Length: 129
Image (cartoon, rainbow, N blue to C red; front, top):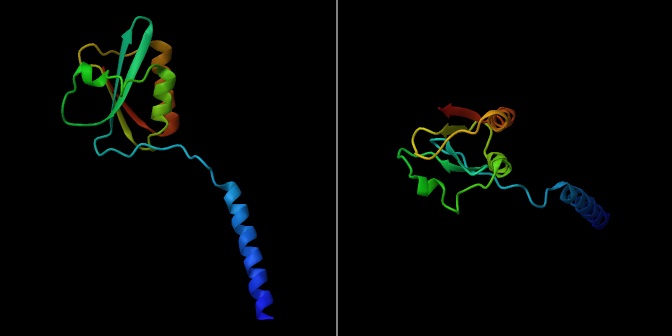
């Protein structure tokens, strides 16, 4: 009798685990770690195109070469939204244009789109104009 109970329990356990396995996301989206000083968002225009960089906050002013480096530069607003989507809700994002020469804010629709996305995602956006 005990052998049957153990076998039945094993079958139930395996069936339960198989059901749980089907519900696990095989490739969850990686998230960026929270930053003690929030994140710094920079934007600049080249021709008709806007570029962005989203970097962990620091106490130092970065150079334009540093924020526009190929390994940190985001090529468009869609890429920025994807990167913002990796931040945890409640994270501060400081969008600055005063600290690094050559940076600026996109006008109108793009600015409103980023602001709305941050609000909907629970990100705390502060814009330094």
